[in-house]
Amino acid sequence: MSFLTTIIEWEGPIIDVRPRYWAAHQAAVKAVGFQGPPENEFWRLHRTGAPDGMMVPYGKPHHVAEYTRLRNEQINSTELMALDQLQPRVIENLKVLKSMGVCHMVSLCQNRDGINATLNRLDVWIYFEQKRALPQDSDRRVAAIRELMGGGRTLAVAGTVPFAFAANEAGCRVVGISSGPTFPKFLRQVGVDVFYEDLDQLTDALARHAPELQRIGIV
Image (cartoon, rainbow, N blue to C red; front, side, top):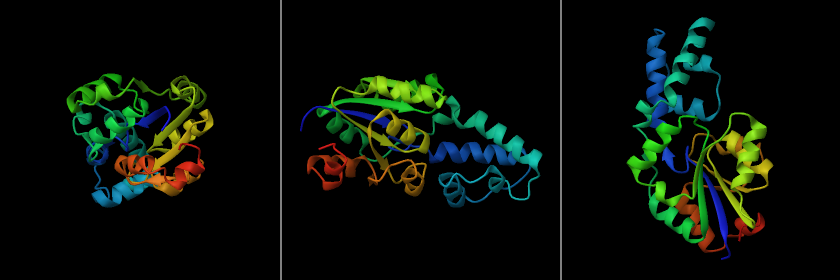
């Protein structure tokens, strides 16, 4: 296989964000005096992009607004990022992807110190040529991804809609991780039509030159 540049999203493909997101939700909903949905239902609602009002059943608009503010303050905090853990067999699969070219890691999280601390704690920083927190502005996000793209083929591995959309706009070939923070049907709406459960399935597909990867021009 010829040289491949891979840009992997932190949230979903690499780490399991569920414990962190759940902890931020619980702290926020309790602070406003309500009991939110159980964990499985919370995660389903989050993956569908449900309105925050559904996270605070029976809450009035000011309760929902305060919930949103408190949750957003905590969800990317360094304290809660300590709950992040690697998805299964990530290190083995990062080694495979790195052997095919270069790997870059990107994240929508703006807490660079928290990301770096987690990279060091989980001992995966060595597998990435560059690690970048993507800008919040959509145009700047696309430009940042283009700076990471190689001269040949670039594969983007997405877990969220904002990254998938930006990577597609930048000209990457995009695949989605179906077990990540967003249901595949929402990634399909921004042009993703190849999905794998995890990085293990992706590297297997790369090794066998899977037809779906041939179709999108990766192998």
